[in-house]
Image 1 (cartoon, protein in one colour):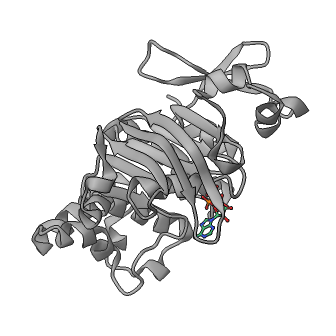
Image 2 (cartoon, helix red, strand yellow):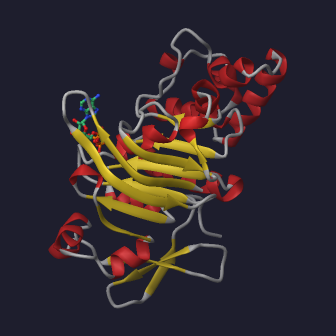
Length: 278
Ligand SMILES: Nc1ncnc2c1ncn2[C@@H]1O[C@H](COP(=O)(O)OP(=O)(O)OP(=O)(O)O)[C@@H](O)[C@H]1O
């Protein structure tokens, strides 16, 4: 569980990015922070692994204030995936994935073997292991970024617009893959995006922000779709423009699968993982 307690952040130039933000993000669930540019999403995300320190308030992981943790250890114990994959250009894919385990003292040969298993896990051919990042497509690089973030088997995965720079088809693939991985691994994922469609596909819980880290609405995709809190949220999710005629409903009884229904409440399918229906 990650808890923000009255967290504020003011940068030295006077910009207030977040003001008095309090919220609990449940363990083993995917929480998606969504909102337009500059509303403070990245600032909140980076306060979890202490890349940014709050001006006031606390961030707690399982009731322990991160400010009391060793910064380097904390950072290595939390997976982090960025929009630009952040891979080291002069290291092969396999060594990029093995970086953190090696820093943590895992023998190189063992770390490389684990790295190959992680490539399998994120759907990458092991044949790519000896390539350099520039020899991969954008989507492949993001998969390597996810493998690298998982390499130290973190409980928490922070993802900052990780699929923002790839084309829509690859992006949908990556989203399905992340949902599949999450069903398998059950990490506590905090995912930042400005794309509400992406938020609804990935999230157990969505937090929609106004500027200054102020929550406009928080809830499951089904709750938000069924009852937007106000005009801002309705407009943000497109409900006011008649753009959306499909809705997602949680199904409590079947392991968290999500049902897609039309505007009349008729079920038209289940959100899948991208594999063909049998
Ligand atoms: N180092 C900094 N110094 C000054 N202001 C900053 C700094 N970092 C971020 N900000 C400001 O804080 C506010 C929140 O920024 P943040 O990056 O958290 O927003 P965001 O919601 O993640 O936006 P985006 O979707 O564009 O990444 C913005 O007004 C931004 O300009």
